[in-house]
Image 1 (spheres, one colour):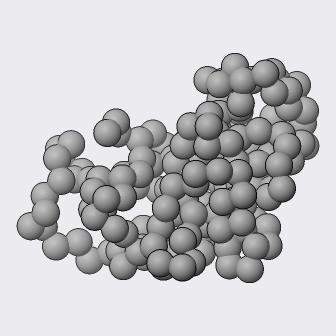
Image 2 (image 1 turned 60 degrees about the vertical axis):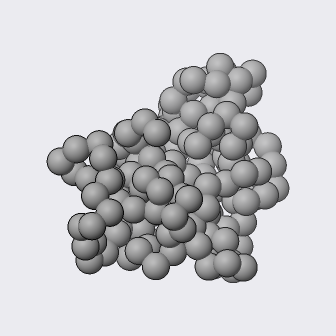
Length: 164
């Protein structure tokens, strides 16, 4: 698993739905810093979005790397399973982040954005059912599946209501 990247473009109003996610991680969960994160409300664990409708439970953008359910070591790329971790910071929302625009999609300033897991862990598109953010750039952009665009990203969980 690659090391994540800080995708925070501009700090605007950093918020968290859950500030410590230590108890919401499964041993099979691996997330990079910058990935979108949803809350599985049935099993009460964090998950990566698998489809656009998972936007209903989006809780933000991961702020740290998680490898096999544990915080990645700051000293090396390995995970030290014996090290006690007092807390793990939760995903953030409310700021502007760099996200990846789906190939062939044109975005205009102010357009609503929806999850597009098919484009990757930070993928967005301009159509769907669950708005997760707003394009904050100043010009029209056509996505190629790799172009990063700035977007104000919110959270929809709990209650499937978009908040910044």
